[in-house]
Image (cartoon, rainbow, N blue to C red):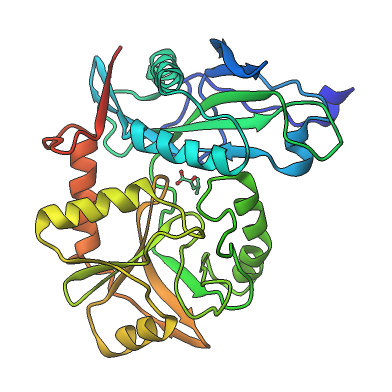
Length: 353
Ligand code: COI
């Protein structure tokens, strides 16, 4: 009965998959990694063939949002080697998210065991010689205790799923600066990668889509005067030869791509300012300078150029031409993680297959 009413995930083998033409996130790879949390510790790590989960409808994750996830990437470096990009930083963020959601942290050896096992099991999803292709890795933890009472779950499931990815956004974005709805307030869960942050953004994003925008740039919840992030990515501006980006706070996700691009700028001698950027400052800068770049930075988004920004009824058009610094930053980052430039910061975690 349930299998008739529940859409089943569409499964394809890597050999049959069309790597030139696909929609991100619709096709899983062949395997899943699992571990269970029970009686106060993580146990039973294992790789299984992909299949749907079977959970009690009472499971706490369905009702009170005790869910956390990460978004990471792996790259084929050579026939026998896959690179998982910055797993240590993703784990640190995941554990901060888990702590905020009152969920048990994942030990480093369990995380790395899971990542290595899944990329080994699914390495055929990263065929050699595909320049734009990466494996998107989605570790997540959900509360599984079957209870309708509002409580912290006593049991959890840790799962790692994967799907192929090229570029999440395939054209420069039209965005609006949101000054009515808020994504997160100070002291809230904005810095945590928990499911509710994304679900809460759906309605304002839906309204923005109706108005012809692809995405929203959120502003601070108390004044709506300062830029925060874009929900699916951090926001960065290149103006006067400097990189500007809002500082991390309890309402902004500590993006791994954000951190990597800041480091690359420093390596390249580009000044970086992590500071509050007011909506008024951005509008003024865009109105008076020809070369201002605005882009989103994220694991899935990589570097996503913003072609138009709607602020207080006016559309501004940041520079997206071939000389944009953001493309150079993106290329530098891609070269490092695809093994074409020395990894001077120790970001690459190489797995032999
Ligand atoms: C990521 O970049 O990994 C995210 O979680 C954002 C989402 C757009 C896939």
